[in-house]
Every structure is written in C-alpha cells, then in structure tokens.
Image (cartoon, rainbow, N blue to C red; front, top):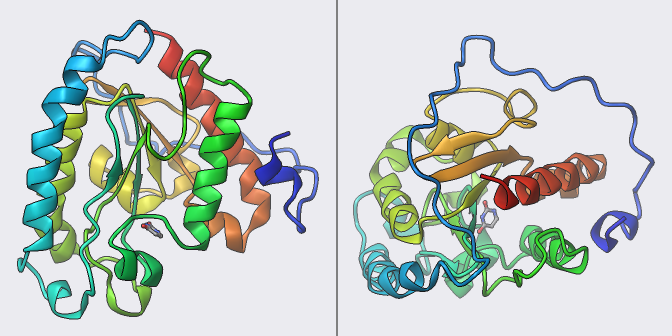
Length: 243
Ligand code: URA
C-alpha cells in the first residue's frame, strides 16, 4: 500500500465497493483516433519539443487574460506546470489561495497529496521505465484564475477559460489524461455526472485515454476515497501500457 494511503490518520480498510455506475444515457464514442505515444522508447521527444512554444504562449495569454471577472481578484494566473515527457496529464478544477499566490497549480494541501500520489506511482513502478514526478507529468486546471472564496467555477468562466486547457492538451498529446474531480471530467467528456458514476471506466479524448477520479481535496475531506483513487491510478497505468 503506498504511503499516501497508509500514513493517513483516518485510514480504514476499504469497505466493499458497489460496482461503479455509469450515467445510463452515456454511450462511449468509438475509438477512431490513433493513440498518442507512450514515453517508452523515446517516442515523445518530438512532442516535447513542439509543445514548448505552445505552452509558453498559453501561459503568456493566461497571465494577461481579462476574459472574465476573475482577472480582477487574482494575484497570479496559474497556467500549468510540468512537461509533455511522460505523456500523463492531470487536470484539476481551479487554483486555490496557495496556487493564486505562487502562480503554480496544486501547491497547497491538495497539491501535496497529488504529489504523493504521483510519487507513489513512481515508487510502485506502475509504469516501468517511465519516471514520474511533478516535472515529468503536466498539471493543469480547468480555470487559470482563482474563484473568490474557492467557490465552484461558473459556467461562463469555464466557457471563457477552457480554450486554454484545450490548446495545452492539443500540444501535450497525452497518452493518458487523469481528470481530478467533476469539473475536469464534465468539460473533457462533455457530459454531466457524479464522479462515482464516471470513474472506473476508460474514455477517450482525441488520441488520449481518459480516466476520472476523485479530486485530492475530496480525499482530504474523505480519506476513505484514497483507496479508490489508488485503484484509478492503477487503471491509468494499465491503460498507459496497452494500446
Ligand atoms: N485544486 C485544484 O483543482 N487545483 C489546484 O491547483 C489546487 C487545488
């Protein structure tokens, strides 16, 4: 069991989980696009090189963005951090107070947990031969600016901001996208649903496989969610390793 689960003071052995339910009207689209490459065998070098100017341009645009009211209350925009090298992208919701101060996603308590989750994947060698840490994956949010008082993103904010994350994903060409929470999942899947109805399946976003899991902030509030998150990360690794 990785440290981020076992060291949790509130850790309890997992209760048997009912089978995850998928929104009944959701039909998986056919997988027609060629899968983006994994990092095994150096097949991502060209993607890494091509992604750099695009990621820099998105960051410059986000830093100067005035498309919604959040620009008036932000300290710093939070474009994203990491690299296309591993081919794994984590998509969160929106910056919180710590991220707003630093201009970097997932640096507060939820971020510490996300970092431990990524390191746990590396320590357990879930993807043998692929280094996994914050510098090797890419970490990004649906919104680039902090909503006041950490309220949920509003639909018009998501609409205004989502072209940035879409452009980042197009440049990153991830092998696997991990949606952390409802806002990322709903945006990238184009469907509404609860996390428990959406997780436990593998979806597609262009040439990436996509999985959904609980947001690390939810795991801090409900530590028993860490076990299903670890299950989801193992699914992510399996999907990464298979065509
Ligand atoms: N929660 C998020 O969704 N993103 C962050 O960057 C921090 C907390």
